[in-house]
Image (cartoon, rainbow, N blue to C red):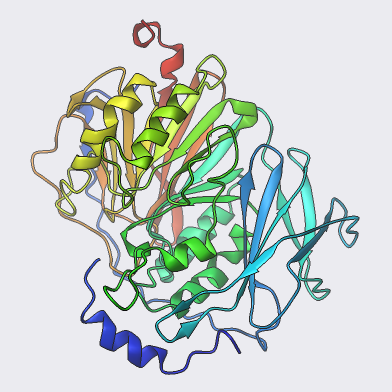
Length: 438
C-alpha cells in the first residue's frame, strides 16, 4: 500500500537529530488567571481500520462564495470524483478533480484527491461521497450568505488526548467555519503523523470548512535531503489562494470573504517572506486596498507567531513581521488578529505600535488546541497594561459576528474535559467608529 511505511521510522530518527526547527476591559481589569493547568496527555494513534482503499482523511475548505473543495486520501488508485446532493442517498451532481502524491525521504503518501464542487446554496446541508465509495456517506453544511456568522478559532491542535477533548467541544457547537492559525499535525518530519491527524480531524473537517494557515511545525525542511519547505502541508491542505478578487499566488497566504462580503478574512504566512517588497507584502497591500469597508463590516487576520505576547515562550518572534505589516493592517482598520505558536491563551486590548490604541486591532493568542509539547505556563510579571486576560490552559475560541457593528469573542477552556467559558468580550467594528474613519 502507498501509505504503508517501510523503514520510515528508522530514517526519521536518524534525520531528526540533524534537522533544526524548525471595546474591551480597561487596563485596571487585566487578569492573569490562577487556573492550574492539567497534566499533558499522550499522543493519540489512529491507524487505518481497513485495507487502505477507502477514502479517508476527508476535509473541506471554502472556495469563493458558493463552492467547496473536498480533499481526501486513498491508499490505492481511485477516481477523483465527488457525488453530492441535498437529500441523503441521492447524488444528482458530480464533479471530478485532480490526484497527486508526494514523497518525503522514504515515505510515500497515498493518492491525495482534490475536487471543487458547486455552485452550492448557502446554509444548506449537502450529502456526498468520495471516489464512488458506496459504503459511506458524509455531509457538510454550507456557510450562510449573510450575518450572523460564527467562526471557531483553534490553533496548535496536534493530536493528543487534549486535542480530542478540544475537538469534542468544538463538535458540540453550532458554527459555520473553523479558522486555524498554524501548527496542524505536529508531524515534525515523521510523515505518518499527517495521516493520523487527518483521521482524527475528519469528523469535523468533513462537515464544516476548515481554513488554515501554516506554522513552524509545517516547515519540515531538511537541508540537502528535503530542501523544499511545506511539502506535506501544501500537498494535503490546499487553500483557495488562487480564487477570489485577490489571488496571492501562494498557498502560504490568501484571503477570502464570508457572509456575502460582510467579513473579510486574511490568512498570513509567518514563515513566508513578509518583508517590505516581498511577494506576500505586495499582495497584502493590494488585498487591503481592495477591501470596501462600507461592505466589509469586519476584517480579521490570522498569523502564527503572535505580534503581541506577554508569555515567556516565543517572546519577540513575531516582532519583525509586526514591524513589516502592522501599519498596513491599521490603515485598513483591521479589527482583530488571531495567532497561535504560544501554547496558552491571551487577549490584548486594541493595540498598535506596542501600546494601546482605540483604532488598533484586538490581538488574541489561541495556540492552546492540545499539542503534544504541552502548555506555556510562564508569563511576564507584572502583566502589561494592554494584556486584558491570560491563562495557560487548553481550549478554543469562537467569534460570532452578530451584525455589522458587533462581534462576540468567547474563549472556552478545557476544564476537566468540560468546555467552560473563561473569557469573553464584545468587539466593535472599527468601520463603525467615526474616530477611526477620518
